[in-house]
Length: 191
Ligand code: SAM
Image (cartoon, rainbow, N blue to C red; front, side, top):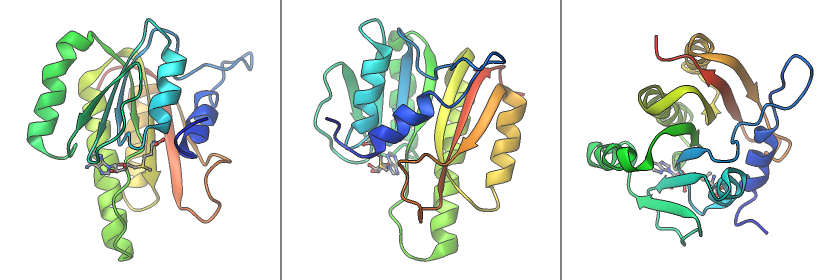
């Protein structure tokens, strides 16, 4: 079993994109090196470790403390904190390369709609910039997104920088939740 219901979303998102012949193009391939933002309690981390397999590597980052996931490295801290970003960057040379960046980060909701939306967008934007900086050419992303003014702009940027892009609401998402995921494959490099 998985630690979170979110795990089933990643399993769905993993098989969301197809080639012209209709064959699935997986997001996380065996051997993939994966950086995961907003990892706690670790459902996605478990899925990523399974999909990447023994040759893969997974680094999970979260504000919250989480139980270790065998096969994954965990870093506790705020991804929006410069010191934490520097710590991630410092670990990357040993990590080797980054094939996939995942973000399921979500702000703690205040109930103030535009503030919550703004903070959700900020997390997605920062994850996107990190992906632009860290990904290898050919790499992939899967980000939780919140609908709002900045949403279209981020999707537009993704379409410029990735060959194949899709926004999806997984079946495993609660129907009332406004969350969507942005999946991108074949990073072409930042503009
Ligand atoms: N994908 C996870 C799973 O399968 O278990 C669930 C992730 S949960 C929906 C969102 C997580 O994002 C929370 O654990 C929260 O602490 C984390 N988060 C939110 N803002 C963050 C930030 N600035 N830096 C790091 N983690 C953050």
